Image: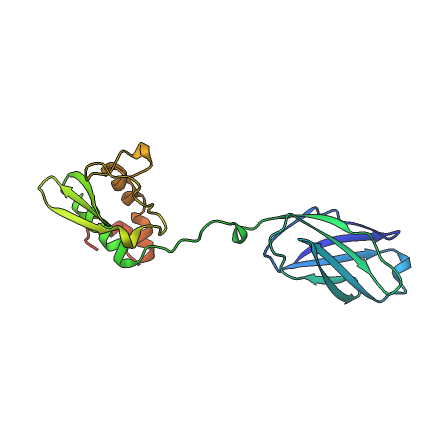
Length: 211
């Protein structure tokens, strides 16, 4: 548990720890009171954030802080039947769980199999071109053989962006934000170890193996 010390003296609450991190539930508010609170064995900690407040009734000098949702700042004060303090100000830093990014699904085994069929072919053949027809991306090799990938299933999932341009049936230059033959090969090389890890393939033994 992580302690958040709060000192209450002269009805003024001060917190020397200036921030906490959202979406965690292991914080404890630890109060140090001056003598005027001795006659108030039961107290209420008021936690204020996002224009709302949460009251935590406790006896003694500490109380667990529930999970705090994303917020820029929060303040903590304390009151009893006869006393009330000011609020100590704390910052709140967003945790990685509270970002606004879109969570993407990982590639499935079938999707990896499609992509690595192309990668395996590149072990022995040169890639002549990539062509896009509908939702199908087709790799044509130096011996005129082909391998295809369904973009309908791959578009929008983790690691592989959508194809955003088409020029006479071939993928436009990577400078335009889309894939060239070389950049697709680089992507597959970069994520080969990810495939091996996800599906239990020993990377040292996997080179040249068809998936």
